[in-house]
Length: 271
Image (tube, rainbow, N blue to C red):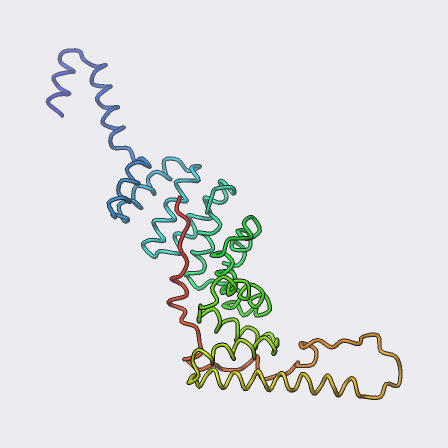
């Protein structure tokens, strides 16, 4: 290259030399096509390096940041993927799949509270998105927002009635939310599939005990003489079960969902 440049300079070929320099620089510049080629070859780390260079050269390219996040997630670098997705979202809130992928990045880090907002946004735009519905229910469960978990896990199970992990989470969510009839029904279904589960038997006992106390206290209230009219005639389960030990129940290891497999269930939306 040096000999060619010297020859061109001696012969006054400055214009040709400039053209060659520009062509060489263009050939070396990072491009989305180069990153996609690395992805197709399964060379994800190289694709990440190219996407980083593309985003540095084009800091307003939302698609490049989204693609960077996707490849970082493939390398299980979820915190970095989350930052890339948030940048892409800020640049283009309408970018397809970006909220689902952001939720997945938070979810796979175990940041369940942070995952709720993007999954809610996906469902608001796509109420039939079963993946977002399931992940939202699990995120509420992981964030210990059990009443909300019950709502979404019930809907998720309608589409996947044989999913044992989801049923376990629904049963425990019902129990912790003091929705005892729901808990009894779900633990009954679990015991039908696995009658030897000691943990399920124990938790079924807790659910039945809560249901019995609910009925007993409701009857005692309705049978009690009234000295004056009451403004409220309905008692919710949350009212009458305050102070129950169920909230602090420590579950055995066999009754806990397998979080490793659960975190791997989400598939990112490919750009």
